Image (cartoon, rainbow, N blue to C red; front, side, top):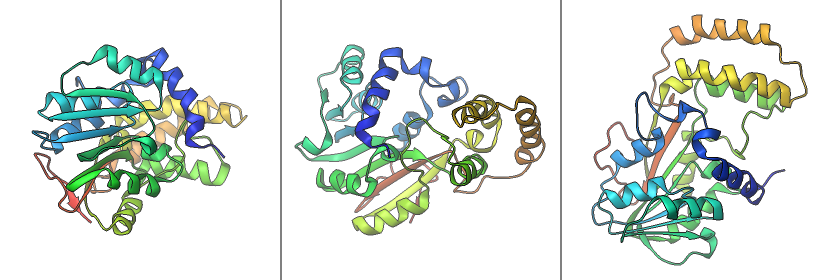
Length: 275
């Protein structure tokens, strides 16, 4: 079974190659300048005067956005030296610092501890959240984004994973939904507000683009024939059936945004729901 430490080489290779070359343009909204996760988090929080720790900051974009949005101090940490090296080259500000560091070894307390798209890669997500909580100032908040699987995209890929042990993602160790986060909020004795977003990836045109690339690769990684004709027919069925139905419940976006706290940050965002 893979563990978080096994992903270090993977991420170093991604950062050396360049994230935009590795990840598809699906990470971005139509004509958007920011990846969707960062755009949603930036507008959901009032950053002015806050101290911020970004765990798993990668190449540093979200930490830099927090610094530019008025945070008084932002520290981005990551175990990838390649990611931190690129972050330092790309972003610089008096209130911004990047460190090659494991959060287990970090010292300090903050108003906001955030970790975008990382919890699903950690060996023990609840243990990680407990560690994040220890770094909070009184009244502080933990902000998490994570892929959400309670939608047509998730149902299809999880069926392949559970029934056929299909390698549906390259780096995920866990496949999370609002159900897990609601349970963790109780275990942490913290309140939770949350929303999901990016419905097009979950059951729209992005789903079609994603599956057109992903499904042949999944079958190939399973040692099966690529079955181009079968995949083509399946994609036609998704277009004519899945995409014509409504899947816009609060659960259905491809990504979840979760804010934990004694009094969770509501900020300028909208649509966040309490658990």
